Amino acid sequence: MLANLTTPLLGIVSTAAIGQLGEARLLGGVALASVAFDCVFWLFGFLRMATVAFAAQALGAGDRLEVRAVLVRALLLAAAIGLSLIALRAPLGALIFSAMGGSAAVTAAATDYFHIRLWSAPFMLGNYVILGWLVGQARTGRALAIQVGINLVNMALTLFLVLGLRWGIAGAATATVAAETAGFIAGLATAHRLLGSFRIPRALLLDRARWLRMLAVNRDIMIRTAALIGGFLFFTAQGARAGDQILAANAVLYNFLMIGSFFLDGLANAAEQLCGQSFGARDSRQFSQAVRLVLRWSLGFGAAV
Image (cartoon, rainbow, N blue to C red):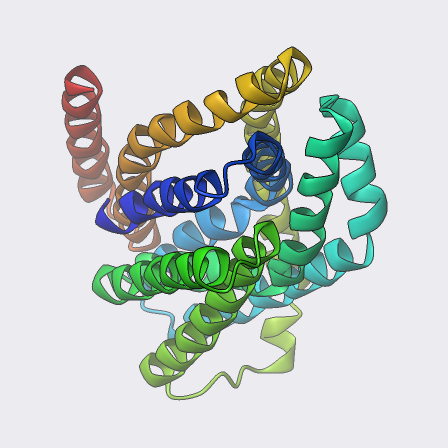
């Protein structure tokens, strides 16, 4: 939960920094581009969620080779998706922004931000995998350190590049690319220290049944995420059509909404790890206890929020 809370804080810092430039079109551009990234990157959030589950199951089963294989398979998939997104960034951006219907000035600013930040795609998706794998291995402290580190570096660079060097919206995008790249390198180093090696028998790495199982789970999560994204995209598009100032105001409110959303998402991480590990160990009693525990905490936090 602590790691998740720093993510919406990053959005607040970026919004505040761009807001200091005094141009609604830039703030609206960041809002439009941020939702565009939600459409793109949240769609592949299965890389984190599924990796948590599969890594936890391998841990519960005591299968050290499969623990490695889960990480490497997911990283290969993340790299393929990330490189594809970079190659398709121009038509992808044009398609998303034309659907949102923002003003010409806002769309131009959003496009600049989108094209720069999309270079972080392989590293950001790779971070989804590594952080999910660490949570699945019950190494939440290390996942926390990496996630908080990424966000703190991003915040510091955003303030420096946007307000210090006056790079504007390009500075905010560049800060994210640099932070995600640094986080990916740190995450790989952490995983290597825990595993000792990334070597896996070729037959296990390319096992068709395991790949199909992973892709089937990813498909189901992707459908759920697409439905969620559709709601955010609809309201952002309505704000964009209402004018630059309305869109900019909605960007501020959106960041506050994300604080509660990311905080509660920590419960999902806990559920994935606890249930996955007990499932891998074939311990039905522990599995039932984990489900009841997470449900109680979820109901408590839901009522409090």
